[in-house]
Length: 305
Image (cartoon, rainbow, N blue to C red):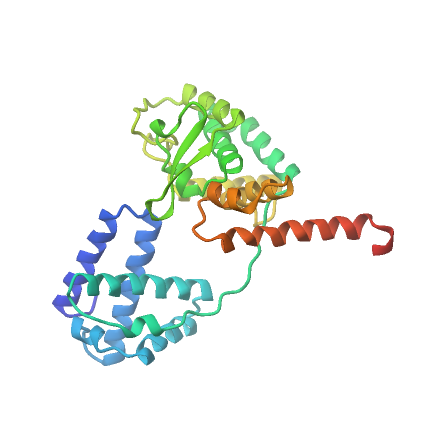
């Protein structure tokens, strides 16, 4: 990385700080890339290896130029918003640790993000996914049970894939699950009988001994199951079942929230179950359920045709 020694040291100390905060591996990798991209941009922008003082003296136009360069390089709005978020984290940490002060970053507006509605699966898709996972004889029995338990957990408890894969044996209580979500925020969610049964069947056949502090979901060779492997398995199932690309592990979480809303659940309770920091995030699902009602109306009401 082309930069002065003081900035290089600060950058790597920040990475250690992120690791100590026990952020998800995905978030750590993303933030590390955000900081690295900006340092590389600033060095090129200035025509010499950037230093801490260069970052301290950067103005709003420099940060906007960075985002513009990312856009011209093909980065979509959500990626650029993430770049800005990671950069802010780095600069705020530098400020808090007394290494430099940079107040202009707080005045930089992120890109306008497209309004995307969550895309839940319908009941038939979910049933086909779970049943096909369990009946795939090309895979070992314990792997079929593992994958089935994971899909049932995501749909039945509304977990993020990272939360499910970070779940430890001791997080499973008699009728609840202890979940460590974003920002290390803990929440308790109900353990439905169907989830408990699927987890018990999988763990009974898992060939690797699991202690109380070990992760529930195990990879083929005995390590922790990684998101990339779970995503790859879902892609295989999509091809086999001819499902749309919108069918992802995260879509099962969307399906959980939508099912609760359709069933009359209140937003505040659903917010708590999902671990959303802001109610506005949960409110996106009301648009989905409203659209479902409109679709039913259009297809069934005689005056809608």
